[in-house]
Image 1 (cartoon, rainbow, N blue to C red):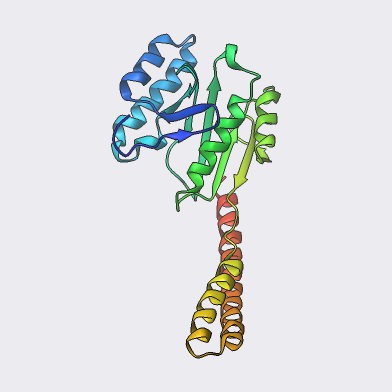
Image 2: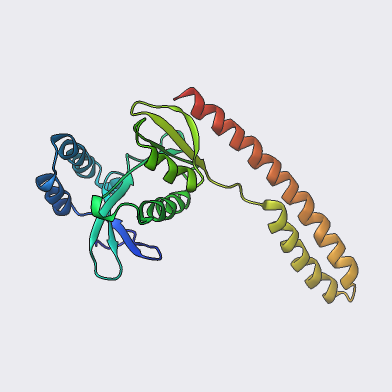
Length: 220
């Protein structure tokens, strides 16, 4: 793994971006021209966009226990309208063991760690009910039909600013109150200030999120 490239650890797996050489091996071992072409597009994305290759590369899913390669998961490019799309595939002999859901949850949470990502979506083939169930179990909701079939989306949770600033106000109020031997008054003032700031930020966040939802819908 290259320096500064992410490594995601789940209960049973290690998930990390593949190198160009590993992607080339996937292309050569692909059982279908369609799959090989898909890997080829990923490789081209990596080479054409080295500064953001982790958003183009397939991420290999490897078992912690014996380093067995069991499949891949990854993104279909950087965020667009604060949205990234994921794709994945698990080798047939490892299907039905919960690996896909485990990987989807982990990679989705990793993506939400980026300030550019608010929505993660995935498209499935209409007849691929197993994949749709995986997405639903991971919290994704049906969001209409895309180019490949039913589209599912998961939205990052809003930050609870009110709670954060109430606790911050409590801490500051306690310190100031203690300094002037007016602990009760200091705590009350701190909580009130925290509540006001937190409420304002919560309202602002909700308005911004609604705006992002509307923008995303316009570009579908």
